[in-house]
Length: 612
Image (cartoon, rainbow, N blue to C red; front, side, top):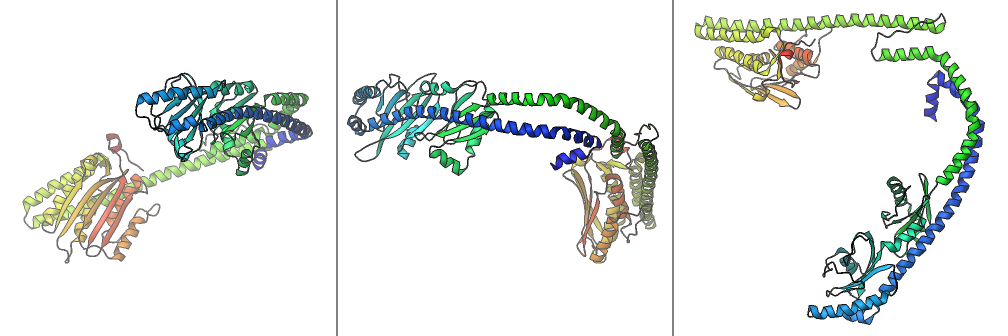
């Protein structure tokens, strides 16, 4: 009710319309409900009584057939000739065959004129196979069959629902119900074989077909409420059968006990009434399903008669109510639609101003508000774009002079030490460095180029610090063509050399690794140098983690953190705040810096992009 109330009250148009409708509907609907309820209950009680009688008749007919089967089995159990045959051990096939011929005649005589039983069979554990029919045996040794071993082990009769072939003889195009009972040796109480009685479908079908027409149908269910047998039906489909069997399978324990005690249980499903009775002989259930179509047709006639006059009057009333409600609320609906478009980002929407009343003035104010918002958003966007460009240029300007200063300082010392060849080599490497640094104005370069830049830088430092550090670069070649940010690794290696070498650590080892981590790339620069004290590490981490103030990209970093902060901010500008670098260090053990960026293949078009 709350949802319906919210639906109605969410629109002024619906509030007006439903108010008029309710005033007209309440008296007529009340009368209609009382009439329908009384008629339906009376019809269902009559239909239920009829269905129960039909199911009881069918169950009695089936129980008579099942009782005949039990009587025949008991006769065979009490026949001394069969007791003797089942105890005996036959030395050869000839003697056993002779005995089987006599037993076959006895079985045929016991059946007499019973046309409902298709065949009786006595199968001994001594390989004796007796049959009442003239059909050939499927095979001689039945001791390995599941039904045979179940009857012998459980020492009680077992009913098996319809199956397409006989368990014992060869018969085509027929279905059977089989009853398997252990043949008890009266001398010692042991099972010396199995009695099998098979009932053909033609004996059961007339019971079901008698009730199977356009309105009624019988279903035979096993102890788990699965369908064992059903006649062909033109109205009861698979979905309806599944609903019926599922409904009986979910009966309460109390209802199950009522069924076992011989009472009937009734369920109502969509379009049908189902009555269930229990078969004491087999443990199965017989369900009678009666169509409620006749009741529904009568009910529809009553409903049509009572609603016909009402509909004619209501149509005209509803049309006029709807027209007036929409006329009064149309300007509000138009404004609601326009506001939803603005919420979704469409600032080009405008309302048409009609007349000079309150809604017209409200529409004009709305148009003015949207125009003002659009102008403010365009102004803010332009300011932010200029700010990001200035920020990026400032970061680039901070890195390049810093690197150039360090490199030229190294070359100067080489020439002072009269190491001209090393100085020339260092200048050549410097030329490679700046060629990659320029990269035709591109900030994004392949990993291959970034590693080449780093190797040139390491060569430059090696000339100056030839005996104070070693460096090793490791990378999977499959990652060479991925996107990287240029001048990303050089400041990290530079810090490792300048701050890792100390009196306690005159010689350090630097290891650079590039590896994939799911959808990301990890660049790790590790050294075993002097490391940092916890206070110093925490201060450096805070500097890197803290974003710059808007309009001021300069961060107050400690010594040694100047280049790291710039690298981290450049990564965040290009790839987002979820990426950047992390620092780990311990005094006397070294420092490890990890850079995380997204992993994606490089392309010429992407190398030319600038993410602002």
